[in-house]
Length: 438
Image 1 (tube, rainbow, N blue to C red):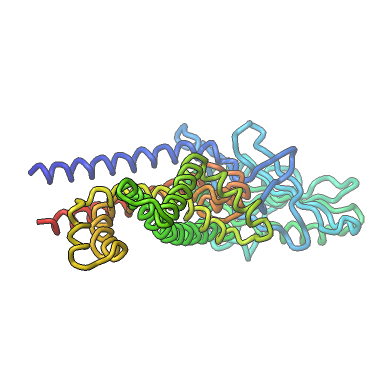
Image 2: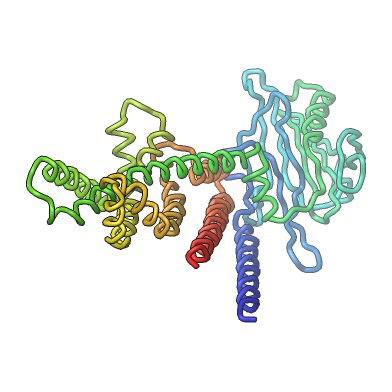
C-alpha cells in the first residue's frame, strides 16, 4: 500500500508541476504578444508573418490573428507600427519596392478597428470581392474598397472582412499620381491576396508557431540535441578510460608505496602518481568552461572542429571525477581479494584486471551513471566555442525571433526530460545490482 501511495503522490506532483508550468507559459506569453520585434519603427529579425489585433467580446479583450501576411512580389518590409492604443502587439507593416528608383509605390497592411459596414459608410466606398482570398467564414473575402482623394499619390484602400468585431484588416496601396487607378487597384489586390483574415489565435499558440514552426526553427533544437548527446557519449567514454588508468595508478601507489623497495619501479610509479595528482588538482580546481575555451582558443587554435574539441575537453574533465569514483571503488575492495589473486598465480596487473577492477566497477556503476547525467548538463556551455548544441540552438531561435521565453523554456524542458529518463535508468540499474547480490 505504501508503494502505491508513493506512486500516486508522485503522479499528483507531476500533474501539478505540469499545470503550474502551463499557467506560467500561458500568462507570460501575453507579454510576448508583440509577434515581431519593432525597433525604431523598423521590423527586426524576421519576415512579417502575422498581423495581430484585439477585439472586445463580452467585456473581455481577445487577441485575434487578423491574418497571415507574405511580402508582396517585388516588395520588402521596411517598418512596422504598434497599435495606437498602446497594446503590446504589432498591428501593421509597411512594404516598399526593392528598387526604389523605379518608385513602385508603397503598401501598408494594418489593423482597423471597425467593420466592413463601417468601411462601406466611408466617402467613396464601394463593395468589392477578392475571389482568390479566403476568410474563416467564407470561401471569398468580402471587402470594402475606398478610393482616397487624389493628390501627389493615388491611394486605394481595401477593408477585408473579419468574423470578429473591430478586427478588420486595411490594405492600402499608394502610387505616384501618374499611375492609373487600375495599377493602384492591382497593387492593392496583390497585397490583399497575401492576407488571410479571420483566424483567432492565443498568444501561446502565436509564440509557439513563431519560435518552432516558422522556417522549421525546431530543427535548431533537434540538431542541437543530437550534438549534445554525441558530445556527452564520447566524453563519458573518454572519461572512463582516463579515469580507470588514473585510478589504477593512484590506488596502486596508495596501497603499495610503503611496502615497495626503493628502485626504478617505485620511482616510475611515484612519477606517474605525481602526474595524476597534478592532473586531478588542475582539472578539478578550474571551471570546465575555462578548460573548454583553453582547448579551443589556445591548444587547438588552428582547428575549428568545435564538436571534437568539446568531446576532448569534457572527456578530460570527466576523467578527473571518474578517477576518484573508481579509486574509491578499488580501495573498497577487500585486500584479501588481491592476495587471493596472487596466490592463484596472477601477477599484479592481471589481478587488478580480472578480480579487483570488475568488483570495483560493479560498486561504482551507479555513481558513474550519475556522472553521465552531470556531464550531460555540463555540455550546455559548448556554445562558448561556437558549438551548436541544444542550448545554443535555443539561443539561436531567441536571437532570430526576439522571444526569449519559449525557446529557453523548451531547452530546459528537454534537458529535464533527458535527466529524468537517465535517472530512471540509473535507479533500475541500482535495483538490478542489489538483486544480484542476493
